[in-house]
Length: 466
Image (cartoon, rainbow, N blue to C red; front, side, top):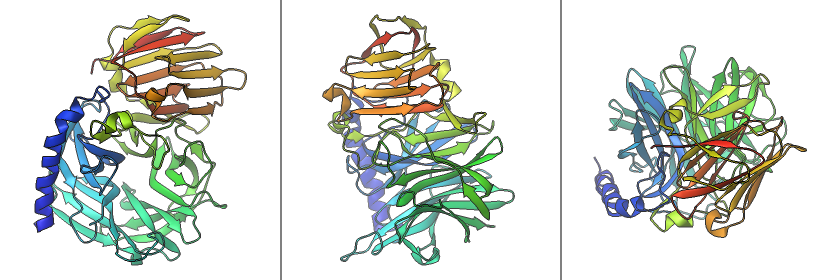
């Protein structure tokens, strides 16, 4: 153990112990979403399950509520809803990751975790840190017990990537398929085009580039956090593209893949995964039952809005509720909360058309609207749907509740006939038509009760006992 490793392993727990009580006293502290003990959280990393325990890692800035040098925070759960903090898993403590342990993934074999991540290095000098001056290294940390790191090493440096790329190559997602190992890496070319590299390995350590996934025409300048997975025989590439035109500063969604992604394929149309204010960099994994479970960061990099209400208590950001991904008859992805959530429902109350109903901030609302409708939250946020153009908009009118958020809309492929809203202390996740469209947002109600006002529909609202 070098001196930096020794000191970081002392300093991070110290900072957590000093700030945890204040953070826990925040009335907007989430009850069943992953959140940092203190400081900053962003991308989910290394999602996996070993035995009966789910592991979730995340980009963690314990020293800076606005970001700072990234570590890998670590939480575990038996049910995807109650999460326990574990000691920080990865520290920026080697020459190949000294400016940040950036995003990556977990491969589990025989109970051993292989954690692939991007080691960020910024060299001193007059560099733009896009085309010069940055090392984005593919690194591997191995853990035999899922709690402690046995070894760390760098597998690939900038020189090992294909020609024509900038220094922005990152976010390895690794998985096994048909007896081999595959890695997808997000990349930015020197022409400022986003793409995904496909690499192949026989031993998890030595990798060769076999294909590049991109679009015929430019689609953003960088594709972050790639994920490659299959649903009912259809392969999908999920990415978070930067530099596309969309409601948020950056996008997040998926392409269906036609052909063999390992050698020769084309990407279909891009579909946005979430139409709310706060959703980025999702990652998925498969559990032992075959469910494809995805968790996203309920945040947005470089957004004009923020979370001042929680920053005042020394913490910022959270993850979405884990969502099960399925495929509809048209080949589109549906997202719905994991079934474990329903087991924590209390006795439903009825939110009646035109009548205000006060409910716990942690709730699960289910309804079957028949046409135009709206749903108000504490008089400062409204979800409104128009059947004529199948448009659903989420609009803030209370600045204190919004943190600077304004309005987001989605046009549905079919009339909205099913509505589900999952609320936590400071978040709403809205699922339309069984997850055909989703809007996720942070919000900051005044208390631990929320006043709902439905118009043109009646809903069952279940308190969540979590």
